[in-house]
Length: 199
Image (tube, rainbow, N blue to C red; front, side, top):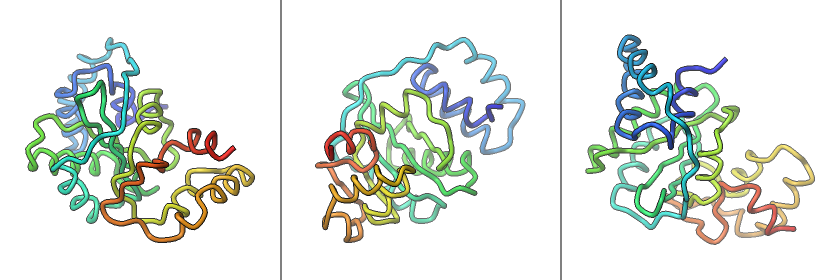
């Protein structure tokens, strides 16, 4: 059974970004009447998978990293959608309040001058729509509370695939990532892409 949060995740790339921002704020605030009205308005939107590419460093990244330091999250990536729109993808801890984390990162981006923040928050077990999978495949790691080695291991479940990837990362994966971390040469999010390179 989808939750309101996962229903909003499914609307990314389909619903207007500005309405998604408002709907996610309503969810975080517990404004069920407003959220219900917005979900009804967006119900017929057809999802699409846009083109994603790695995002260049932006001034707003610092605001995101600062916000993440005070939130129950483990990593954040950023991708550029259709060549113009930055999308921040945040992996939260298992017990985190996903709507609250979303609202906090949205507010940080708004305070930094981004008029329409595109923030996608998911937990370790959250099923991700194609939109988010595509974004992660192209994304650059912006911040992590872990080492690249630990992050890669967390993202994999099969022992042989995990070991193959860790062997590929080698010594580079041992040292803690800087904050903000930018691992452009192997982008820690896209596990399938990493595994293809490590083959």
